[in-house]
Length: 313
Image (tube, rainbow, N blue to C red; front, side):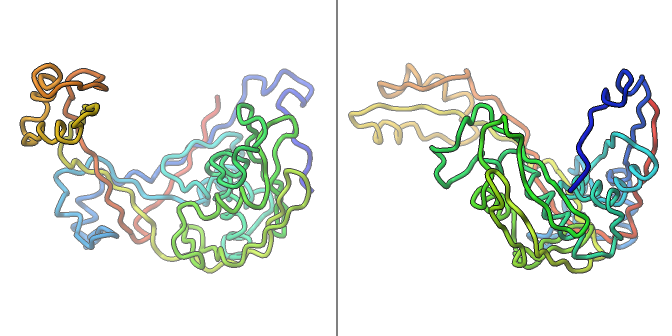
């Protein structure tokens, strides 16, 4: 079992005494390097459509590679007590401390997969401890005081999910399972920068009240790619709502149809100048909003070099 956690003040002094080592991880931001990468043949094709990034290059607003646990591990090994990162996978934030604490090698694929699964289960906070839970959701105790999950990890890659006993919520196999299937594609290949976790090997056991044991996880070698999250300008939108009451509600609503280019200036007059009994109009005249669209892509890992800087605060 892991050693009991101690607060900074339990050291016998007044906390950190004003001395804190902060690790800062950079290298994920690729925006300033895009043109060079494209010129070198890295097309950054859209994973959904196959289109090359050049099609929207002039509208790109941001581009960040998903880093894994490695720079987090480096920061901890160099003495960081707090680590601040750019774009790092949710799972890497949990896997990194486990690799550091237990000395897991970066190619210990079963251990890497176990730490990845642990991170995936707790990445959405209280969802695995009773929040957003479908099974018996009306019986989840004290939702207003829901407890966030804690991973009690072991060097062999097994771990328990618990929460503080003085909190609400519930940790059981059902709540953990619901979080496991969140954002999951092929269950046999949950791909991260650190390795590939086989979700079909996960074993869940109710080991006590609000305690679920996770074991049996198998992993596969990491790929040679990183995912890149790109955002680009995609136009404008305006949204407004008018609600018509009966009788003849549907007929009244259909009599308001207008071309999109006249929408923002015409919807407000329709309140008093259109069909009767309109209600539900709030927020004033709809305002055009910029649309930022998502462009997922892959890049060769060799093209991204994370950097770790230590700051004394």
